[in-house]
Image (cartoon, rainbow, N blue to C red; front, side, top):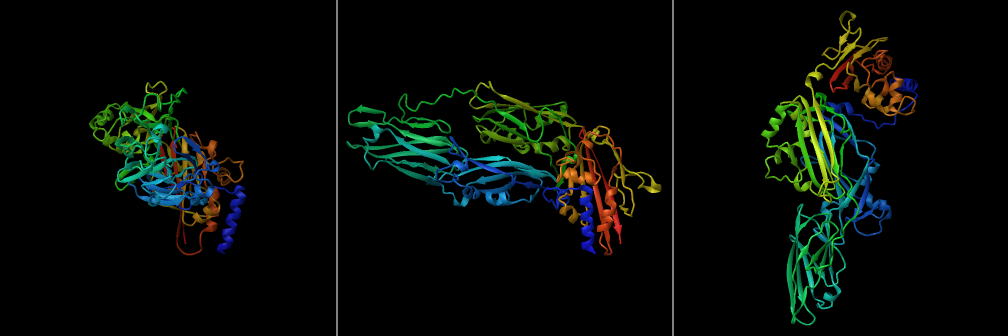
Length: 601
């Protein structure tokens, strides 16, 4: 009988919708939302590798050895780790395994970093010949009951320091064959014999490092050679080309080396004992490309309204589950990142001053000794060395949102203005500006709208389902018509179906247990789309919902009644079916209610 009922149910749904959604099966999305978790789906992620820092090499065209992949199989071996803000590892896989996965990963709400590397940390030597290591990191946020999808191309770059040593021909001819140079980074060192052509790759121990250079040997005509030099400011992802030349040969039989170092970032050259005119820096006549400032998933030109539904209470603290992430990029590296905070609420500005925050500050110049450093770090800003000269950076400002809404909360319009300059543009002639505007109006949130279940209350009166009430017994032929009135117009309409009995059938049909009627995938005429499936059940979708202040005909789930009755088990027990409705209006106010049904046997 159970199999027959299951078959009848599926047939009825196919007839009603005439299509099957191809969305991935989010079996536990309702449970995830209740427990402040969300999902991560990464099977659309694609990798690309830039060899050293001067050549963009894609896997299909790479011919060099080392960690740069020459085939898809080598790329598949890249390791991927998912870490939370405390550094706890939540998942570890390879790019090949990830590409084959189709189900999302459930994670607690919070900020995360994905670390990608051409090899595991345990396999990476501190220093080795011709052993480049490539990788990158990618920051993202997991929101309550929402699937975060990573499907863009992610670029892996050199992680260690590439060091090569060149010697001018005239000097090499004067040095004995046993002359050698030792280059060290901390306890790691490599010895370069005369004429060594290979590159040594050092894994950096700090964000900024110092290489120690030491030459020892003798001249063919007699006389020892010994000198040392410290090369400071060395970072991972750089290629340090060290050139050794002779400075003075006119003091009798003594060869004098006057050691100087000209440090060029990235692929420019370090000259040891440089003579005038040798290794001149190359002047790039190309104009500076303006940096970019993007608010992920939003338009910086539009105000954003905070609402209580965007927060989850976890371990006694409110966590913002709505992504508030600003992504910036500069081809030549970030030179300056000025932030100006303004607000219509003077109390907020006074509160920021108590944290030691000035109205305007440069994130690139702040260090741990600055009063504002700790507060800005807690709010999600990258600071100082981790931002300066970076080509890309992300600001996850979710940590500041509870301050605006709850602790203690500040109504008004709050602006975070960014001015980004490229390191190659010291005058700021090509600076880019953008402003994030956050609106907090908690009074409006208290008057968002109404949701009434017509005829379900005492004496067949309307039942206000935004308030607590006992589940209503479901009987054959029951009409479930909902009168929804949202004066400011609907921006989002989330429906959450919570029922252990109904869940397996939703999974079979690839219908998620939570969906937004304003943004259903596809349209009503697209076979296989979620929009067409929901429309087949009588739900309005997309343009039929967005911007509406009320529904005519009424919002109804009457079409579900007979189907629910048909799949309810014959065994004695209590079976519940909850349809949660969460509606966000164009002012950010949230009105929520639940259609609570039960069958008692």
